[in-house]
Length: 228
Image (cartoon, rainbow, N blue to C red):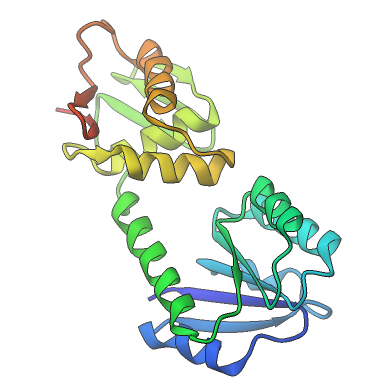
């Protein structure tokens, strides 16, 4: 179950799509973009921007950037017609995908369902300070090691560490890390790209990078954070 805000920039999303999105007990909120441009983000997990023929590109771009600045939510565009150039621009700005209206609205429902499932698997809620060894401060974008040394992290380093922390003691697959980093950076990072970020992260938090205590490799699968 999640809260989905549908923003009608031009035209209006059809009723069958709304009904399909509600099948998983999702709460669907319809937003009139001409009247309400601020409150729909308060509790949204997913934002669907509907521009019937992808004609109001400038307003769509501004809305995407505004959403990305205020909250980390899934963003999809939906239209009756897709323009390749516009779709690439939206992806560069950070949307998760561009969807074309299809004959079967259930397709949209399943995309949202699978997306939410993967997000819940990747970032279950957890106390970021339950370990005395590592304590994460999201506001400062930093981590404190053994309660003494505080080091600053880049945005991507913090993203990876948060995911590993929330699944401490369990393997986080390369695919999960790649998807999360793609949403943040707007590009698809392969194993080598992820390994490069992990390397920088280890240099900051490990006492001996050759024998890491915290971030462990799980051969051919991904990484695991060890806190004990």
